[in-house]
Image (cartoon, rainbow over all chains, first blue to last red; front, side, top):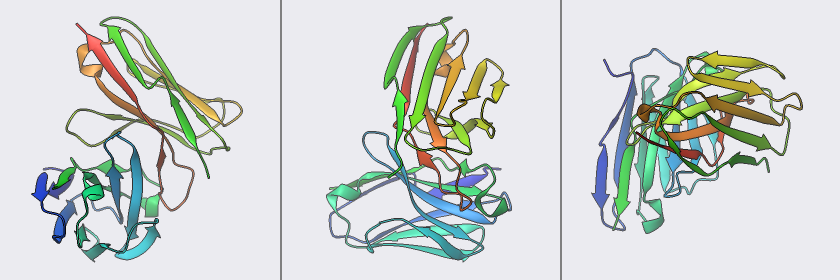
Length: 113
Length: 111
């Protein structure tokens, strides 16, 4: 009964490839997020969706494209992967349009070679 | 832009010791949040603070929202090995849900 789940947990790929990370929450929340944690453990928001609508889009390269097929899912597709994309990507969700507590998934560790 | 400075960057303490860490901001906050991230996991909310001067406890953890609304501290009393992890302060003041995190304090506890 995992609240926020992500797949895969680990992803190793070559530069230039396209990859997707999936996120699902079973908490009934209406808002979902993607965060990036770099090698120095710094956490930064990338995107948020509220009821499938894009709310926050930080200065993220347009190679990153989030997609929300329904309010329980928020996937992240990355085109033309670069070495600097190596990081841990966390999905999170919250209720109340972003004012509620955010619950984080376990993270996807992406390594671009 | 807004900056959050968290200190210390890391701590290595003996089991049973008390721990204190703090966070300062360049601007006024309406909400301070403290998260803990254990190795290999995502951050988990420990304490949320909503009013200047507010002091809130969660077990052995105590956090305070500074009067100036530009700082907060987190104390852990009688540390135990499972307190190991990275502690993040975060600004949750926006109504879009955007969290701005500090750099984190890495805590290691020696049994």
